[in-house]
Image (cartoon, rainbow, N blue to C red):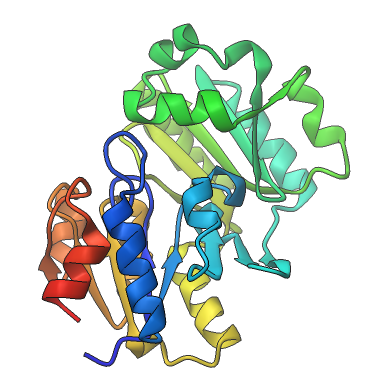
Length: 274
């Protein structure tokens, strides 16, 4: 296969169940890099949430973060950013806060959360996946007055990530967002969350934009993922594979199914597909 770029999701794909990247995967990334094949994280995380081992890896040069809202090039910084218009962001925040929600705002490659809710009790109350709780605890920037953040013009929201305690609230909120904000796109990577970005901003458009920046035929890309927010990336890439722990929709959309996220996916692709 004449693949030049591997677009890999992070949580549930490149990272194991403890949110770690294995030495075997890092070694495979280096071997592929020496062959001229780039491994690019394409993630719902902000740039600064990506594990340091991945960000510091010599052969990982590009990052598509916040579900395609941003593209980072090592040595140059953020090369592309799609931010939500302020009036729209204020309206979305007001809508989200009308439900029982744990809200995060991604801006400038950083994730922000309410200082008073970054604790184990809140994580459990809002039914946040235990695998993701430690990431929030370690990586979130805490806001003293979270509700006032959008009044700060230096804050440019890339993405809202909202966890709902009640799934019927989540369904109603999603319908209201679609009705009120046709300029907004919504995806999900966990059972009870909504990830809210500008329209036509997703992992697929992020991958396309990066390929255009690199003058690379997107047909020479291979995508790896596990969650619903990987669907647009799967549609955009030349070929796509789901990890064995992926959700049913992603498995159905994939060209094939590979090992689990705990079994060194990049090494597996190197040895069995490329």
